[in-house]
Length: 129
Length: 127
Image (cartoon, rainbow over all chains, first blue to last red):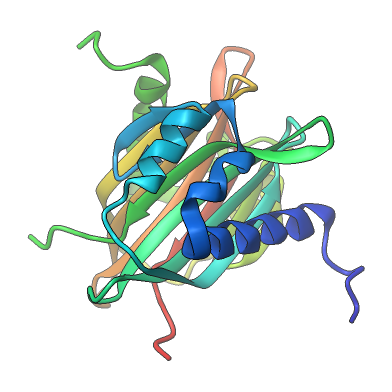
């Protein structure tokens, strides 16, 4: 396996994304480790500040089963040595129809661990008008 | 009008300006980028203002119209603003398509410029 060709930010970003959705789908109450007290989440337009509030929101989302499927992901380094990751994909919650979603993560290296300081999630729903 | 946090005002101001400019004359978007800016357009990477502008001005359509469905803004730990947009666009006589875009804005010399830009059409492989 030739792993050496991808830029470091792409390796870190895609690793994080893979880990995030695997954990989310298996047991989202365990996502606390990737956030810190300075983290912000915007979930469908609602803001949550800090690890505890974020994990509370994610844990209390009203579905039992969820499966995410990533259609595309992009990663870039930022001027402040962070990593920006954008994901376009689809998800299926319980017996609901499949829906498109869009999510972004800003990752920062703190004490040798990559944490998520900024997280934004939106379903790809439009008002046709 | 004073209720919105600063980062939301900056982000929303930028987003409005970006799409208005893109739809009327995208050649004038150059001011929003610097030599350090990165654009990822449908998975292709472009580094620096010149490369970015070349890509945007060479996009193969005459008319384009963006419509924003939702936008979210947050402050980052390094005093930047991050803005995520979900919307729809119509190019020439093509059908309306969904898109997603992300901007990281940085204040340089009292001006908010775009250091990171990512664009994707909302197309999925049904499988």
